[in-house]
Image (cartoon, rainbow, N blue to C red; front, side):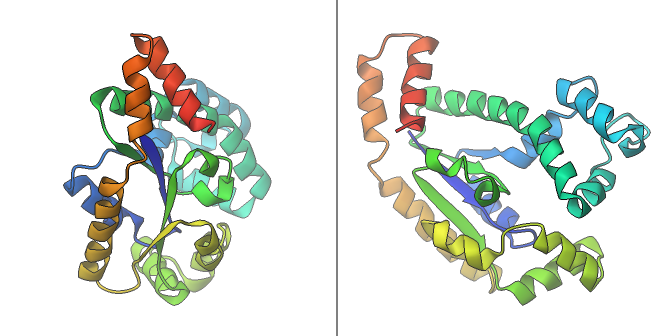
Length: 229
């Protein structure tokens, strides 16, 4: 089994691409969904966030107000780094659990949907391939303003908090250009899916699994061997 990192930029259309991949039966691990789960009330990350950011960022039901927290971290880079240091270890642990699950189920590859894959950079070395969902900057800005009800300055602030899509192009092994209509994007996703399905990168792991020590310990060993290769 090999890993495929999928990323993009805010409002670049990554959700559209993920929806098509799921329709095709691909195993997709959503880092953003995991990020929501690991900060639920009474979790370790939830308690740490309250300690450093205060109760002002809570909703009435005790959950984190993502919009309020987002407003803080987008305007204060040091706060964003602090939040990442709290949540990222918990997110990575859950991602590893899900990767192991798909390994056991016999999937050829797993797609890791990670919004800030290229910002963190540390995770890219674990990916056999990296996919960037791209759209031209004017379209990205317009989509963000329309989707989030933001004015131009607020949209620009959100976009500038991430590495520009143009810069991310140099790090991606595959690019889905979502600047056009949905049908164009869908055709590109189908082409990507065909390439991944035809890849033989999964074979070494399956062959090694046949000779591995039975049990979860052997599977963990094989996965970690793959991740550091």
